[in-house]
Image 1 (tube, rainbow, N blue to C red):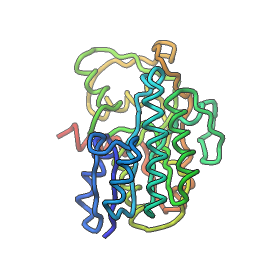
Image 2: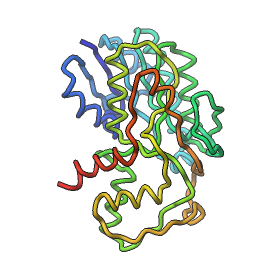
Image 3: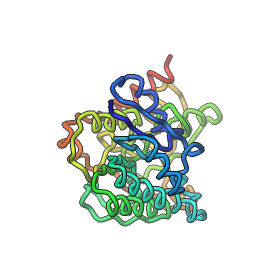
Image 4: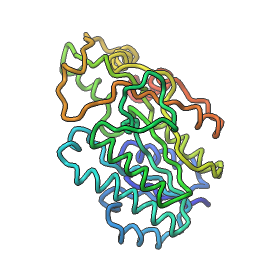
Length: 286
């Protein structure tokens, strides 16, 4: 029996893992949300690791409020950097493999080709910067780790772009959506399958990986596709980023190259439209 700790279990990915865990009887999951486990507390981290014989820790805990991070650096740093460091040190001490979720926001968005794991990082905001520093802490303190950068995550849980679009469509007749930022949506259930696959293969190809669904799109096209697949009729207008003033600057381009994770773990990565269609059929077209 493989014993796995999931931190930040109240978030999108944590809840997807909780749902999928029922399909894997050979995996013993312990789910702890931020109330049950504060990863920024090094003493609590050591106690929890000491009290359980974990084989893996999946770190889904993160400060992800991109705009709020600009004025709340201390909290973002505490969770994304100090929390990651605590988990890495405890994992090293107790022989645990750490699977840590990171983000496309570690890049500046100036590229025009999908980002590889070897490309230079250059975060343009506090959120991306703290996530990048968290990666560095893990690499410094723990050899046996997987860092998985992902992008544009959505699921049936918590707040996300798909949910927001469908809610706004009930409230408005017309929407303006940004059309000059390009990336790839990721169904959190697909990422969940990849993480569980990494664990069940028991491979030791540790290091940095990129994972999202395949293909690329803009937020405008993403929204239009959500409405088409959901059979929602609404007028959608493409606008530039300048139409929305936000505290944090967003990367213009954040498509991730998945060649490495695909080849190492022999993955067939579904296209974002295929995964989105499946998601909408299951959750919205009943």
